[in-house]
Length: 256
Image (cartoon, rainbow, N blue to C red; front, side):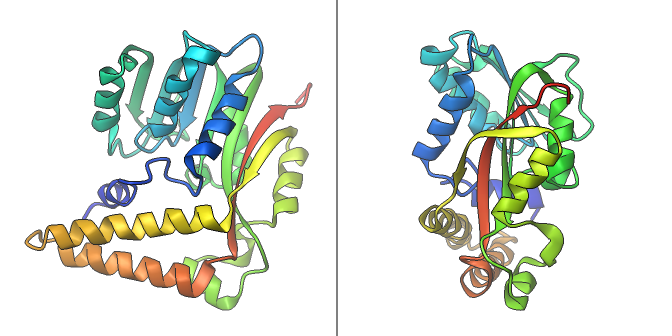
């Protein structure tokens, strides 16, 4: 099965596609959208199915009633579902979703808030991600970025489970230091709890497992079921409690 379709299936019950609960997502978005005098545009680089943008538009009546939301993702999986939901809620005219490479896409305009949650791989790492985001931001704009970090030094078992190397991520302090060295200052942040991680991983593996069991005649059923089992084993037997996730609201230092 196409990797993008697998990802879309895996996030069926957890569409924010990151280890954050609903309250954490809304708090971060409210904080990002509350920048005076009220942002009018938000861009999501590597937006998945566009769920973060839809959530932002739902919050906008209290914060920025004329908010426009633009998303870019290479796959486009789930776009039609999100557009349908936005249309049903009267938000569709303020949402644009583009199938394109977020690392090279250009809007021809600047945005008040830029999001990139769990998509730093598309840019080659955390610092390249924030530098790419800066090219889309109005002066004084805000960046909301989500990235993995090491909660503790990774064991050989954790690295094998992730197919990663120890220098793929930093610890939390090193993550913040790297951003500050690149000219960004954290305004607030959220470190995903183990409970949020567990909910995300159970949902990821459970959604795939359920789909496979409900579609036994599909040629991809066995493949999807095995993928869910392998992911569950890697999580529970490898990186659980070692891989962390932090979402930071950032502002650019003057002169950078």
